[in-house]
Image (cartoon, rainbow, N blue to C red; front, side, top):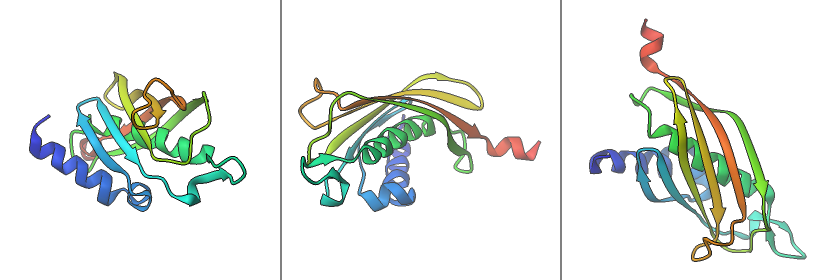
Length: 147
């Protein structure tokens, strides 16, 4: 993936996707078929105030965004749309009250769909997975509308 294309993707993820912008997601790495995102920690992302563990919905959001952005790397036009068709999450351990990393890898790509695998962990704790995910994302191609 060329550097100027990476810069466009980073801007789209960090500034144009409303949920990612609201959360403050930062792109750490992006290549065709792969993304590594940093999700910041805020007190509002706690699910259980007694144990100070991250809310499962925050983890699910990280899984969905990582898979969707990995799928986006196979768009052929800025007018293409990517949407989640199906997603599965396996929670392995609770997330701590700190930032998380979300990685998305494309397992299979077709003209109109992409299958992804995601993993969530804390920085410098890649061996302590918080959650795994699998997703199927639809790609609606702009050129399909013209034919």
